[in-house]
Length: 247
Image: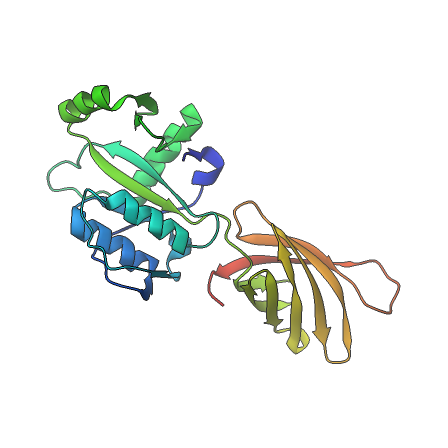
């Protein structure tokens, strides 16, 4: 997998701890467990701060199976979540990495080379150069490079809280079906989500009508239109920006 420049726009937060069995935990807590168990640093997109994940199994975390746990982690996150692997020298004595600086480093490389953090089989990416493992090993040792992982939220779905044209909206997506409420007129919404397009009906008391939202590329805003069932008029705009990924 690889990250392109557009995917890397978003901030990341450094975390570190251990893992357990099949239970719901915050995504940041699980990332912390990976770091505590292996010493490998993991940075998590802050859009996942409120996200909970359920991971099956009780396999202990080791440096040898770290990436297996990362893959499980990605499957438990909202659709579109992914990770990249960087190789960085350790911070100078007495200084800790700040998440924003690690992110800026990755973004700068993406700006120069188009991709960063590829995790393709039989290659190791160092400074955006893909090397065979035998050659990469010498470079890693000479420069004392350490693996650093970045977890990005991806687009996700419409589930969450939104600040919209018609007040705060709360949406839940379950197997493609959307239900929700919004504050204006104590409104309700029912619909379906296909890809990045949500088609719905809005209901306010005895009034109602059709509407459609289109989710933005980063999943943090939408634009759309709404109309009435029985009134012939131009559809009105309805836009929103995400407050949280949990409703």
